[in-house]
Image 1 (cartoon, rainbow, N blue to C red):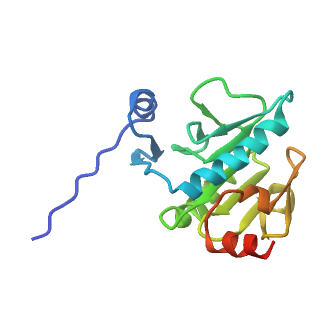
Image 2 (tube, rainbow, N blue to C red; image 1 turned 90 degrees about the vertical axis):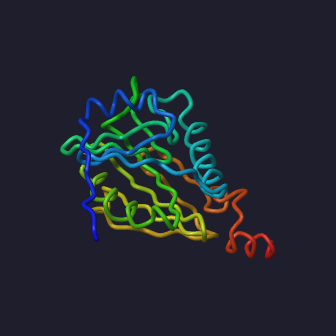
Length: 192
């Protein structure tokens, strides 16, 4: 015998208040909350590498890089996401932003579909967003989707350099993947 699953809705205000004291982070989509799972070491290395590079580059400038504890609110819908890395100009004063310049998501098997579809569509609605970056953790591939290119994706691989045009920073793909242990990086380092 099948049983009906009861769906509980939570208000945006209750979600925001609850997140301040929650032990686990949750994303909020149209009244539903979704717990955030822990991440693989490759995921953490990639997020830290790019966040550190952004932070160092932005020192003394009116922008700031944030890691996974800063929420992004999609203004024309009831959605709050925790990107892996974002840059906001000017710095955020509070628990979330609606005005990021760059959003970076590190892809895993469990998040890839949502990051490439649902979040991509939602993020492209943000007026201030200039670049959406998807970084694969299980192999080496960086996809940059730029507003200035009509949101067309450009992919980068080992040996390439990526320019984050909105903040004027160029990084090698190798530097972004520093310390990441996947088959592509192992083979690349053996060649050197």
